[in-house]
Image 1: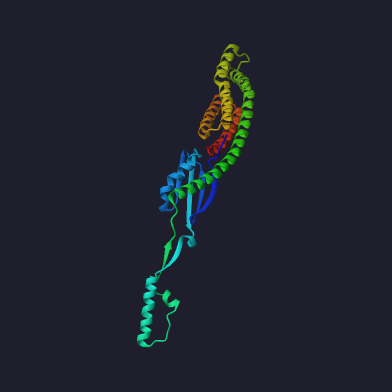
Image 2: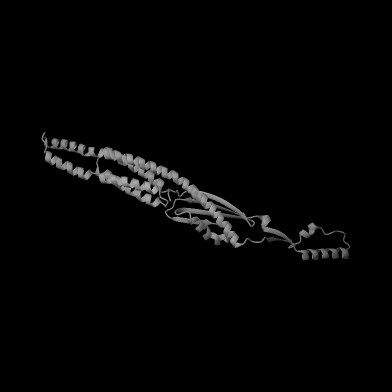
Length: 293
């Protein structure tokens, strides 16, 4: 089954006062490369995320973005320094009594006292809880990525199958055209000999020998047979459960080699036109295959 290397996924979790969001995107790459970007204080969980993604993704560059936010209301609490407040209140009462002041100390006055109010961090989440939640979130986002890559892979496989069908038609046209090449060459050779010798009589034995040599050099049956074999191998790979991108890329290279050989063997305008069309279809196929895992 063809799987694309292009995909995206997003998932989030809220736990212990944290909101974690993981975004994953993948693009083409020769190998499997996973890059994780996350806050420095959480880097110890990087390998956990990489392993989770790598279990499902065999090829492509995968970028994992981890965003972590802490809920302010859940993460901080207010704590009053009561001994300090009582000391200030006692001092204020003493000042009033000694100097005969009438003003009263208000709560607003007390709140302006340095270090009277402090903000305390809430209880930190346990490490095993963080690992569990991160792992679950990574599993979910990777599943999304895999589903998207599989859906895209179906379109790539369908397009590749269509290219194979077109190529088979072109090869069949070339197969039917091949015998005509020898006949046309024999006629041209006969005409040239007659013009050169200025005689209506041509040595038929020598002509037959030359035509036989050309027929042997211009025979492209082997190349066409190998092309048909490559087409069948492509179809079998498209049904395989293993990563197939590299194997298909190799097969396309082999197909190009056979098509080039056909073009060089048979010096014929019609066959050359078919070779050009084959190479164009192979290039389109190669572009699609380079997106496959």
